[in-house]
Image (cartoon, rainbow, N blue to C red; front, side, top):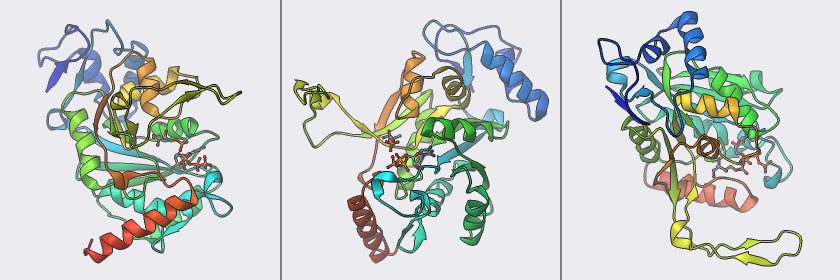
Length: 293
Ligand SMILES: Nc1ccn([C@@H]2O[C@H](COP(=O)(O)OP(=O)(O)OP(=O)(O)O)[C@@H](O)[C@H]2O)c(=O)n1
Ligand SMILES: C[C@](O)(CO)[C@H](O)COP(=O)(O)O
């Protein structure tokens, strides 16, 4: 099914799909070249007039997850790169890959390894017996998270139309959260993030003096998690055009003027960032195991 999202339909073929989109769904190098061309004629943003595919039933297109895992884990303290440290005796990255592979919609996973660690990560994943039905690829990452995600996107096969970006550092995200994000993208939202209301009051501050400059209304705020889900071409365009430093992928899409939708997140999808997060993650895992999960 093809539906207009950002304005009136553009020139259509006899099946109702804009010609550029049908070209983009072809497999192989010709399809890839057309995809690049179609991206240059960017359909996204205010006033745009393109239509985009929403259902893999009509297009046979697949959903992929890019898992940036190239960070050093400085805030976690000295040791191996964070994604390779263990939780319940299993590397954090393996938990994250399993969490993505558990979602029926996710057929392709691109793991973005530390820049000099792709071979080690490939061997680690092979040693942990991940589902053979999922196409799992490993590529080296970059200096910043944004660089790593961009390198992961470049390794996606042509027949992927929806992409999740999921931090390796969120190893315990429940499958329901992953599937909720995919369903929202497949249901018509071009960019989707899971989010939770805040428990703390948040202040803006002047970093130089520490003086409070404001108190945003808490009810209007959400702490956003991953996986963040996107139409592939939209995310590729965001990574090709936004150069400003950002802390998540959705904010790059926001800079293109495209609406991002928040769906319910989950408290177990927290990010392992500091040492106490590891303690919490071990406790959550122990609770799951006690319940037979
Ligand atoms: N150059 C980078 C930096 C981060 N990441 C990934 O992005 C996710 C979120 O980043 P964060 O939690 O900040 O991880 P680190 O960068 O490892 O943590 P720190 O900032 O404490 O070093 C992590 O899965 C991390 O591996 C990445 O792939 N490439
Ligand atoms: C992408 C993210 O997890 C959303 O909350 C977060 O912004 C990553 O931040 P980090 O400082 O790179 O961990």
